[in-house]
Image (tube, rainbow, N blue to C red; front, side):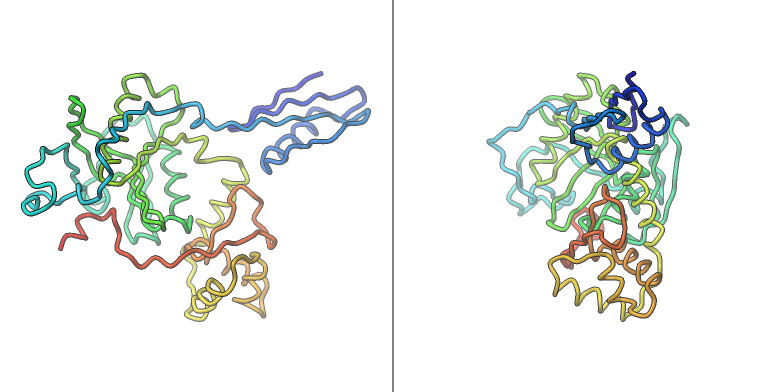
Length: 330
């Protein structure tokens, strides 16, 4: 008898032999293997079953058409405040478009004005200090991930509107999220539920957007909700860390975290907990999780979160934000 279990982005096919486990036992085992992304690769005996796991990403099944013009090199100096072109290297060059920033990333004057087909959410970010708005599960989980991911230096959901005049096609585009990473990479992120939402016309528009933002040193990326949410293990870890992000940390906790970050290439969550709270193991675990959520360390979100989880110290980032354009005007 064969049972096919579908769970998120993973398909597991199992064969249960005569005298083997029940369907529900097989289902529980399949879900465990799926969550840990660890295929059970060994020979099976009578009464056992053979499971093969094939992981696939929706993003791997969607490719934005290549429209890069190599004659135009990426240059962040192309992004100039309106009215400040005079004297710049691009004074007199025809404009490719513009970008209108929304007040405070969109919450001051909400930019979500479509129908009620998507769920809406509003949240306060500890990382950015702003209130964010969004719609749909994909945007919510992306926002939660950006909030607790130490590789993300800053992010803005619904940051503004691009008016693009490139390649003979004029159109407007409002990105779902803009994110800046520790290496100063800036990404414009579009969130979709599944590849079926993207037809040939929209794919060409995304290709134009990709080339448009590339010319001033940014990147464009389409992410799909199932890939953002990932396995149940990933969702559980994101929710746990997201809940720890606002925990009050003392100056001693911060100093200890900064010392460890400079002194250790890697360490476990248990070792960090012991350093920040030697007298109380449970409190140490909570503080360690809060330090991860505040960006001092990163972990593999797809692996179970426990005392043996490996932490990677993040780099200090004291440079100005590259995505809060109105705040960087001199």
